[in-house]
Image (cartoon, rainbow, N blue to C red; front, side, top):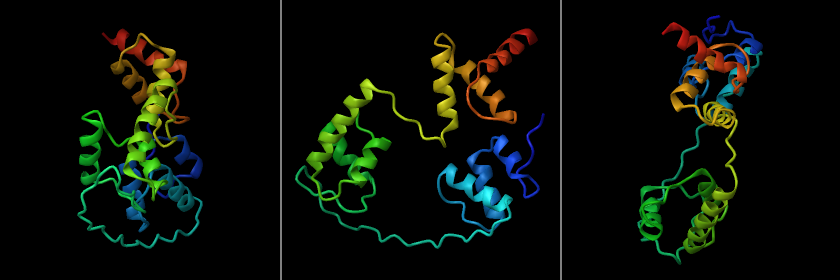
Length: 196
């Protein structure tokens, strides 16, 4: 069954049964005159409101005041309020932590909720978060369906390849229904082998 095109003619149920790329959601919202900013979950919610016939007020864009501070960061510097993870911050953390440093989601969240603490506290938090990651699986946000699917695929099929996982994902997202890994998705691999 072919996936229906994203349009106002869809029912909310049809929309929820099918998988659409974020770019498709954004294009639809722009065509409807609604803001296309935000996470995939935000976009899905706006589209559901439109398909239910509810009026959507576009969010008023607030201009962000750019922080033009050029101070050099050091371990005693205070984490600013409304911090934006910039190249200046990346360079600082790489100089302290080394090339293994990256701004992962947990660390960015930590920085945004700890204004007023020092960058030394941030470095300590980065190492603590890295240590926690070794002992527990990170939580994948619901909007990242692909990542969730791939993790579930490998949990159920440890000997399979990424290529096989992607083939199964492409099959799953092309059909109506939930976009989560199901054992029956492996049938597409058998079909591929039969075609050879």
